[in-house]
Image 1 (spheres, helix red, strand yellow):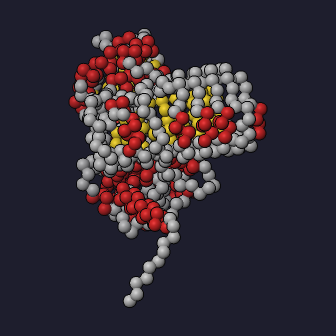
Image 2 (spheres, rainbow, N blue to C red):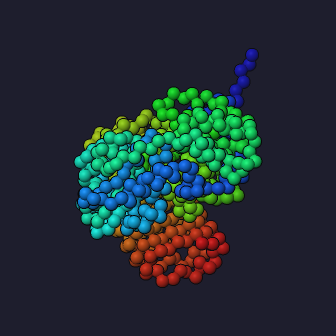
Image 3 (cartoon, rainbow, N blue to C red):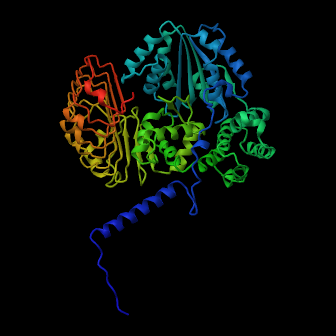
Length: 605
């Protein structure tokens, strides 16, 4: 047999290697999403996904708890005859039983609203950081962001806000058992005339540490109330037209939810999106009900996750990078999703509009909780929903907690470091630890423990980067981050941006926030041919934008805020044909927009 040889065209071997590498990445994604070998995605139907009603923070959607609400309001409205300034009630109950929902009902009640001068709501969770909590309480009481970093300064601000006033505060999901931390946190309250605190917790001994009396033990809802809750979320206004078969299957599913409202609501929201009897029977017979997870609420949540449309799964799992008490910004999360290629587009809509549809779908399925607003939506994840995301994302997402020494997983894709983390002396990680990194979101100056160049020399696959620090490494360079899509710089004492940023041709989103010494942007910023959004805020020394700004033909959104020295924009911006949205606020020296703005046909906002 004659052995034949073939000449391979130039470049084909490289293409074959790239294809094989891509298949390997797809296989890793399949394993990460826990998809079976024979998995086929269910058809995506946008009409079916968008439910006609909303259900978060709407009191008419709350089933039962009227008696519990009335009793709590009575306790909180009673006078303190022992002369105590600070008192309150602690709601104690198992996870998912409805403690937060009950606290919301009380917090928004008219009787409570008429009795107090100031109101605040803070979700505490596991990490009881006095500095963080004090800042969040101040922000909640005032409705304004607070940039103060020093605890003493924060407490002075706190005292000033509540001096001589009556205050009602909810501390949701308390875990802390340290009496000293609690005393440090409550010290500023002594300047108020009256403080009532409503605490929710899973553990009664937490209430004893807080010294807020009495304890209110929240019991399970009745079978009738649980069934009403299920029908409300599963059928809505169509309950009268529902078949008896679905009713029977629904009652069997409710029994498997262990009488926990969060489990019932989660599975009911899922069933509302899958109205066929076949789907209901599949869910009733799912093997996941037999999960041996420690918490009984886990199986129904896992079923809800397993039946998410495939385009929503990586978006939901990405949330597990952030800590439990994180307050998500939908606007930022959509941008991060797009940066990683999670948002699927067909050319008919912008990616950000589709990303907002993803947000709404996850909210309607009870994965996100908060009052949905189209323009600016901030939300949280219930602890058990967060645990669900962490469980299914494996070790790909990681956030540093407290003042712990970080224990980075083997294959780290997404890393978040919160602002309240205490710096610890640690050895640099071994070579290659950051080679797989796709997201690096840093909200403090922790990275000065290592040289920033060390991280970036490895993390060449980064798609999203957020740096917040007053410290500027002399070797600061992003030149190797050719795949970077999202860049956010906060609290930097730079007078100008590194020129190397302008060679990152894949950049789509750039945010500069509170860079007080920033005088100018790089003259070659026009080289960012993919840049779609540019947001600049609290950059008080910035006086002008470079002429090359007019070359950003992909730019769709421009936001300028609190740039007090900005006097003018480049005159000739006719080439910004894709510019749709311009927001300018508190730029006091900017007297007028260029006349060429009138020639931008895409501009509508």
